[in-house]
Length: 123
Image (cartoon, rainbow, N blue to C red; front, top):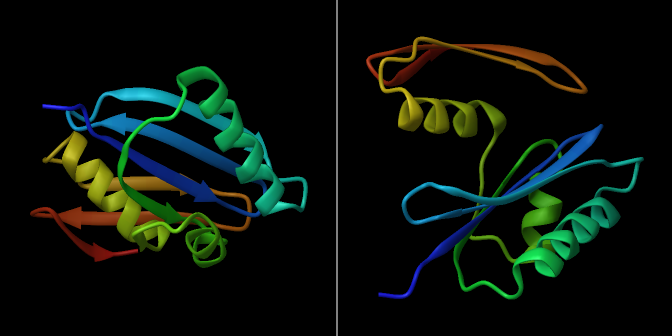
């Protein structure tokens, strides 16, 4: 079976993050850059860095999050765009099923996410 890769993009007001994982959720590569007020340029640079290091990878799925998620979803053709609350909760539960609290300190705001029985109950 050919290895499958998944692309995740988090584009915020201050930074852009791009990560590639495989089907086993192993991190293959990542880039963290400041947006400098240019989110499209930031993500283009990040994707080029990964392409230069990894070569062309067969991407089975792509998702975006962050304040610029809809813009970047449209530009890169991502399958889904999710708000940060959902993205944090899903990732935290996948990594640690017993998680109860997630704290996000972002460029525009901070979030406290409360999780019980693998469901977000408050934020």
